[in-house]
Length: 420
Ligand code: PMP
Image (cartoon, rainbow, N blue to C red; front, side, top):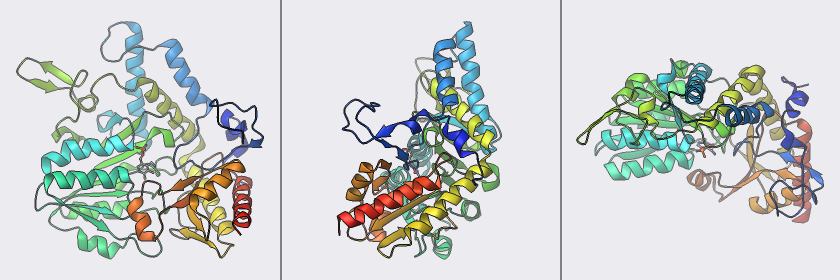
């Protein structure tokens, strides 16, 4: 049995009923398709349940209007929904209130917002930014480029042979020159769950800020930004049952208050003259232009859906599937799995089969209707460190089952036979 009612959950996701296997011609067509879809690419994006789609439809059919501008009723209704979505996110991650919740496009934009609005202003020669070898490009490339532009130094905490951060190395790197420590909460390649509260404390001890990339964490476990004491925390709606086009930047109010805006324009200003402008209150100061209103409504519904299941239950389900997949895949001597052991990881498994390129593997798995990721998963430097250009990654969510992992393992067996 599972910690959650998987069958009832699956009934909320019409896409899980479709088949695949025909030629890709018209998106969504199933006419030539024969095999039931096994969707194991949730680390890239999750599927969307009926209540989320319905919330978005209700918005467009019922109260679609621009926010904050109109006195008319629809605009007021849209504004209430948009603002309440901020409150719901704040409650979900235990922030103090909507002032601390900025809506962006995705985790990547949340990262860039801080890098531009804080990093470009505050960093300079003699400063250091500490990050890790297991960062997603969203974080790694952003800090790398901001450091190049400002003359600050970027340093990487090493990953040990078990896929965990070398905490002695972290203690060595985080020093008086450090202004920012930016790390991923749950690695999208290794599945490692990092000790983010501990690292945040190390950052604060030297007077630095801590930025946590929670793209893989918020969808899969309870996250409490106050307990972590992170200064910034970022995640994406589309990996947690929500729509694409919405991400979150959490920031401590006093810090967001002290920062310059990232984008200028309408909706983020209070008073404008030809000579100068003043800024709107938080969080609107960081949300220039017409925002992602429908997506905010969808994210609100996604959080309600996850909260109904209970994030502790979601985590238990993820861990159960990760351990099962780890155990089944590691039955074979020719499979190398990256990251920590099966009983100590987030809900994903990246691996390689000796003699089969990850892309070929993924392509054969596709013939068996098993959808996984192949490539570097936006962690190229980490793959260099692991000594491979690419890996295959299966990532799980609330609607996945042990039987789907069995289908994965059988398809891997077929690929192995095909490649001798
Ligand atoms: N960080 C991590 C750990 C991720 O897994 C991802 C998505 N693969 C991102 C950042 C970037 O997310 P997005 O593409 O939604 O900006």
